[in-house]
Image (cartoon, rainbow, N blue to C red; front, side):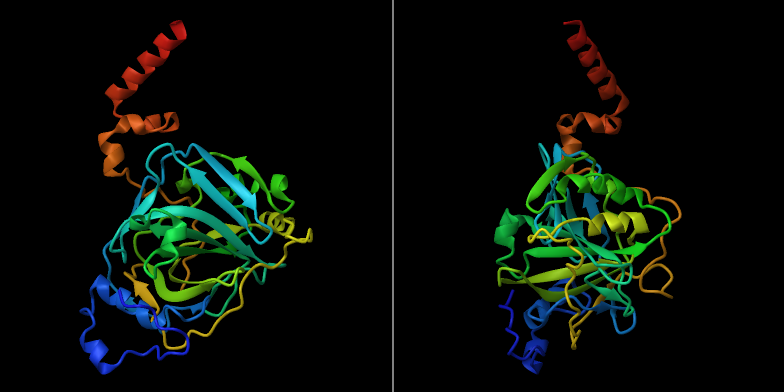
Length: 332
């Protein structure tokens, strides 16, 4: 991949560069634009209007139903971060716009002082009360810190959180721990539950664009941003739980969303559109979606690696063997 051009360089490729570009319709063509658009600021407004429809393979979610060993939640003073550890293989993504495996790293949130603000991104020029951002990094780089050093290293999936009359059960088990991390630089354990209990999974119908992430430390990184049309929702009471978190100065953390940036002429890819395209975001689901997570080849060939909570995934014969072993241990 070519080095990303800086903000003061022309973000439009020359005719010669376009002639050398990968073929339109290939995954490489999406990556080609990181060189010219990776330096542009984020977040931006997302809309079906003006987006470029582009077909990609189905996005595949591996191991998101596998229970982690532990889930830790931290108040950093700027946001709430969720990290999890697995005894064996971690959840990851393949397919879609990715040329390689991307491993789940961490989850954090943005919110505002009322129900009219809070999300980083706007959709059809409308802000929502909150946004959950999930970081994935390219497995080749081994760690998130190393992946941030490369323009193709990190992907951020951004779930808009809409207002809902009822509470979203996917958020409930996370918010249960918020009273224990009210003060900055505190942490607590939650769950543990598999990531499928929090992340809405999708295999098509989402937006993708390139842009930079500017950190509070003055660092700048190039990321791919994915905004799915599927979303979470939060009741008024659930959103109040966010606003009770304290910031680094022991004041209520009421606003940690970033200012909206101009889209300029960058590409916003509308990947494999499928559902009704009347609105850019899909409506709040009436019933919980079924998990589309699948076990990785590593787990499929080594089912003994699954934690006890995932015993329901084992074939019947293996369940009986495990139950017999447990009874024998009790007798001993």
